[in-house]
Length: 310
Image (cartoon, rainbow, N blue to C red):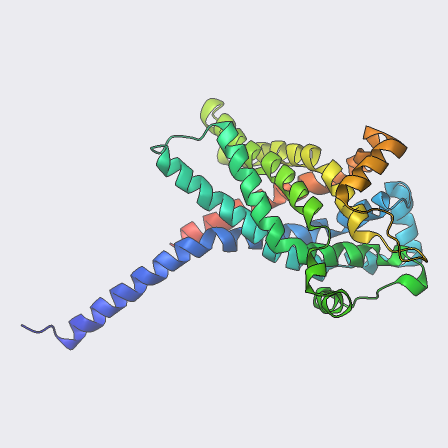
């Protein structure tokens, strides 16, 4: 007997729901990662601005903060926020989403058992590279917008927002210029994500399974460990990346560095290994809380979704 129209509607609705559920399960790790990163950026942006100014040689955290307030006003701390949010919408979406997808696949292949730290580190490196390749244009726009006020008036680019910056970069320098400094950006992202992602999952297992911590204590403790290792692993690469992305040609059109390796060698020769850790306290204060808040926001987003049956 042919199915009734009501039965056909029910079947179609069931198929549509199944497709929607499958699509959402695929998209969810990426959407959650991007949203959590964007929320964290809104809180951390002022500290990130101070960190960049320190790396550009404008003095200590206190001096930079005082000068910015006196000369540029409070709004200067949020200059480049649009680029920061765009960066999270691309970079963090890609890295956290790919990390969770790759981790889930690896756990399945491991018969559901927790992964060894080395494998987690390898997945973190891979996720970092994927995220950096996707987010490099927004990262370039962010660095340039934050550094613009430190340049002589005649050399300032005066980008209005992240999208104007991307448009100007393409128009003035070509499409490939969007990935200027992408080499050190990718290396820095790989090191940061190896420290951040692998240490977080490992710490969760330690605090929750071995030490019997509750949910809140586990998330806070693992987030703090994750933030520290992310900072320690990535600052040298972040320093080189910043120097490459903000450099300007001299009167003869020559750039101070031919590439990231040249920048690293000249920095090592002029300032020694400690030069790469310029601004480490502020960098750690910026990176660690951002990492912590990203994980905390992500945990809360997942709890809300679970309560809604998503």
